[in-house]
View (cartoon, rainbow, N blue to C red):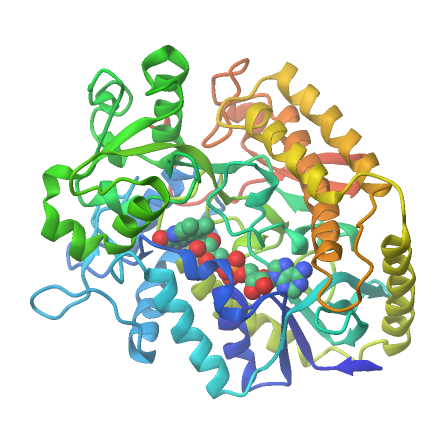
Length: 559
Ligand SMILES: Cc1cc2nc3c(=O)[nH]c(=O)nc-3n(C[C@H](O)[C@H](O)[C@H](O)COP(=O)(O)OP(=O)(O)OC[C@H]3O[C@@H](n4cnc5c(N)ncnc54)[C@H](O)[C@@H]3O)c2cc1C
């Protein structure tokens, strides 16, 4: 049986659902998601969403902060679209019912965030993503969008040079089914779980990026991985930048507030790459506590402010760290947080492969360049969800019917492949391989990188790819076979780990989140370029493409 829709969206986070809402009135749109929509990682976003609402603020200032924050690698045309449409995106959600925190006069409250020259981050306490995702999901339900819940998309189907549908595994039955469509939008989120220490949900394995690469779409700027400065020591759960926005300070084992030495003007509210490197330097220089972490101190804010503005953070600290931030400082260390890179596309959502679009964290348009500013990515999902919906709707007018036979053939081949995987008796367990991958990426492709480490990482990742090809699951059940899902995710993660490492190895400069100790300077002459990765596992190739410059001149980045 082949299912048919005009448009298939893979991913039911904010980006996928906002795109679906935009398309629902134009065509028959369906969303495929490997978890319930409300378990998408968007739900975990804490700190807020940026928009220049203040009368002394402007979209131009927001655009400048974003471009400077990106270390000038962002495409300025895309940033302009993001920032010009920010206020409308926030007000749209407010009208749909998002419970934003308020000022005394009833206007939407805004807090300061890293790298921003104005307090422009709108928030719903420290549960902004939770509020937004519920709002957007309600709207998608109201419009009758079809949702294939707990369906794992395994591959895209390409016929005659265009994407004509996809193949997915229905988790409850174990059936492998073909879904034909005239367009596919990838909205599968980030790939943080390639790393061991990550704030990301366990489902953030970059399936969409891997599927796109296999279908011939390049991946862009994969080496730019954001490490959040403050993740809770032990579990690496995120402690929002909002905690520093509210006035939290960082101290080392000597009780010294060290940010003065790294970013004297913006201190704790310098952009994330700078604060993460500062913390890692303190730890590496022997001024970390137990050689592992530093303190984030909120005590001076007082119990009532902490309880009102950061209730979720307090709970996380008490339940997962055994500390109450009202009385004690929080132990924090940097951890992987966001994937700046992703599927190469322009700001309208189009990839170079006909019929294939990408949006949200899985895409690289690129609005974040070498370093994303906090609060800009929730915004990206909503603004570009709407934009991508318009692009797809327009393209559909000149798109014929999908090639159903090609989809059926692809589903048949995938069924055979998965059956082979299920029946294999010998080989390592995918979970063991995944456990090895994380620390390799943390240690060798982390906050600080160099040629020796990256070369070692590339060898290790390629070795793990070989092991994964021979892996055995130990679970032959058809229904809800999560061992199979983990194995498919692992294949994807290993492909992306190779792309990240290769991109990092080839980029012989330091820019934004990518810091090479052997090339500590930014090198605009050679590398004011986007990296594009293409090819197959074990044999990926790197090319470069121009950055779209614009109104803001490329300058040295100081805070
Ligand atoms: C802890 C945390 C806090 C954050 N806080 C903020 C913040 O305060 N402000 C901010 O701007 N940004 C924040 N971010 C970043 C922001 O939340 C994300 O970038 C954004 O929500 C991503 O949305 P998305 O729709 O692109 O992807 P997601 O919300 O990650 O959704 C991905 C979807 O894809 C589906 N999917 C994936 N693979 C498959 C597959 N193979 N088959 C079928 N479905 C699949 C999943 O089921 C899911 O529905 C935070 C991120 C984290 C991790």
